[in-house]
Length: 249
Length: 249
DNA sequence: ACCACTAAATGAATGCCGTTCATTTATTCA
DNA sequence: TGAATAAATGAACGGCATTCATTTAGTGGT
Image 1: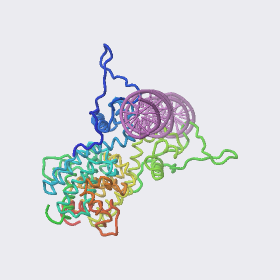
Image 2: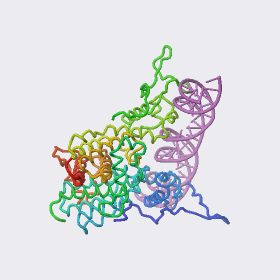
Image 3: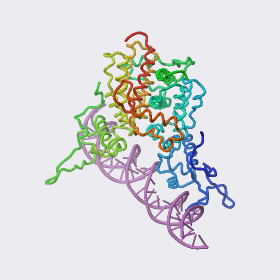
Image 4: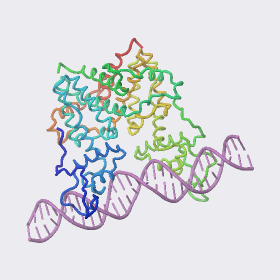
């Protein structure tokens, strides 16, 4: 379930083709125009390169030009494999979804499985918040790994006695919370500091001051604020949604 | 609490200055270079124009050039009032926050107040999802209206017996859910249609099919799917978070 | 074995976008 | 009165995604 990418070839991947000119140091060889004997690009390679670029330069560094350069290709060559940059983001998104841990469904109790899945899901996408606007409106048909995740989660819910008609709504509610929470992780620590506006907003200021360094609901030492809020909301959702179940799972 | 925008002037707003040249139809008069006697731009006017542009052309249509044109000004003139496009988005965001209904805090029971606030908050930003990545990491100091909203909500929580140290986390959890849910509203209706992948994902497919046309938890006729999921998650959060309160509010 | 078609690359060009800068003119303040 | 500041124009810049004509290599049909 970790490798469903459509195309297959002899790992063209990121390997920029280098060559040697007589008596000189390594330099990038000029590829002449026209179709090469062995294809240079495929979707798997583009995905890998995009992920590398993102991890090195962030999403601002993910440009079609930079992607092409990393793949040692002209930018226009990419458009033989993707229709637009959005497609590159889709490839990345679907790969990331395959990293989400759904293993607890089927082995652990429903509450634990949801908890494991939700934390994993949030952690993966906290590093990739620019994808969230894309995912949120993405038809599942275009993302096989994402669909696979939903399948596993749906079965877990059903087996736990969750009424079938409510499964999609429950997943959507959890996902909404997860995506929203992923943004929090990236927010600056002092985002709620009222600063010069403190005097005009006494109640909120007091709440901010007294929330500093609160432990998470599971009682750990001193979780990051985003983790505390995520735990709080997630446990509420698990309890509330769990009450819809029929019998034990 | 609806108008705190900093600058004030004789409503320069959107009014593109038109003029007449002898014997001709109305046409835009060329403004000569140099500082005009009366300022053409201010933050309130820029905000109004941005909102009009967004409602007419969407966020893709909100470009500095288009904004300048609507205000009958050269694009570079905008940079005397905002440092970057991001500042324009901030102005819009803070204005929109002032539209969120917090009136129930102080008059209605805590549960009802949270419910009213959350629905209103979601509905406002469902039309403005491109702002969410901006808001989520925006220090509150830069957004006075947003801060005012937090103040009202914080007071409502405190008065309802909510422990002060947990107020910020609870608000963050609710907000995360709200922002995530705002995306759902804009998603295409058939986003979960498995299409050709239905056979490989039977549990999820069945869940999607059987969830079609489910009523919302309050029992209305046939809510939109996004509304059903929002209601489900919100009620779970209200119940779960509400259990943290000390006494009645 | 030929030939038309398609696939996959280059490289030049396009148009838009946010932003910067030199310049001009008006206002404000010491 | 004169220097500093504020607010406009207009030209320019670099970066971006994308398109198109062109070249070359593989493929499928007769």
